[in-house]
Length: 255
Image 1 (cartoon, rainbow, N blue to C red):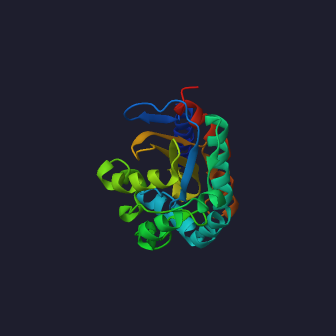
Image 2 (image 1 turned 60 degrees about the vertical axis):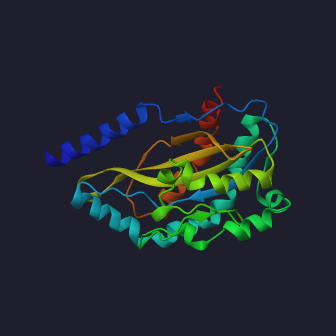
Image 3 (image 1 turned 180 degrees about the vertical axis):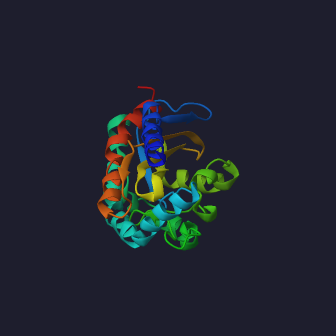
């Protein structure tokens, strides 16, 4: 009976989780109209967000994730440039304008100086034995000093980033520039950690040509029940970025 109750709660939590809107958008200041160009300056993947409770069940499940943490990070590193292209493609489709990223970003005048000024390896460090750093696309700029890898908390306070984003805005010279951040997360945990609900959370921060944050958006993929010990389970969820991005950006644009 106890097993059945826990399983029922697990299933109901997934149903409730997926039945509500998973896209959230916030606007700050004036909306930027007539966007002619966008730059994608950073594409990042953070550590797997792991549950704490129930203590025993979560502990057992987390141990399975931790045992393949190196493989998860290897998969993320191998795919991050592809995810960068997916984000850029979605921005291009929905803003209907050119998007500067990757090689075209590297070739911008002043970009090398910007990287040498702001890129510090410590900016990507996370206090985690298993997922010790944020993964970024090749040659991206990573100028933001996230405390303990907490990206979401960092962007809640303009004083943390305004001086940096102003310099980025001057260098890239486009109407908008974007920062993308994604992370895998484990939700509900089954009895004795036999299974868990895994999903992908993606966040997009949009800045104007003065470096002001004008909007942010977030979305999550449909959770899947996983054992936690197979690398393909994590890769399959990472690939959902191509599914959730377009609806998220469309809502951000009010479409």
